[in-house]
Image 1: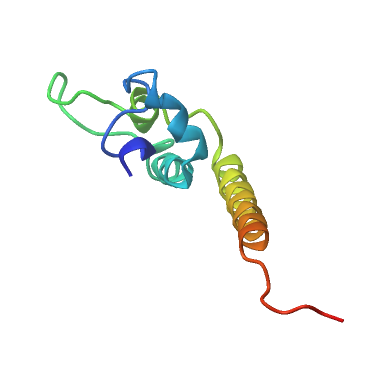
Image 2: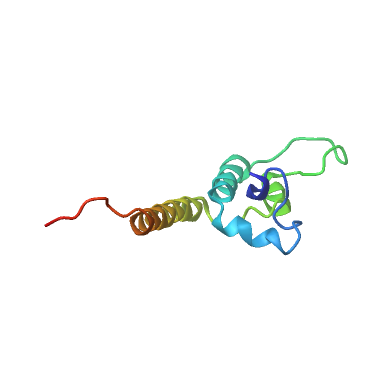
Length: 102
């Protein structure tokens, strides 16, 4: 959750753990959520009372506009498939059957 973008802005994290956002499914889900909520939104406020005047500024500030909503969903599906395949391969490799087929 820390590297998903909710608690720490992904563009301000130190360079060493910054790569974790690329393998974190939460970061793709949060980016899709931010884009769905804020894209095209206009805030009605008095001049100087708020930092953002529209939703696109929010998306740019939190660096969540890198991929579209569809691409974020596709990356989540891809990561799920990769993690599933890696888990299956590791279980298949580590756990040997206790019986021998003849």
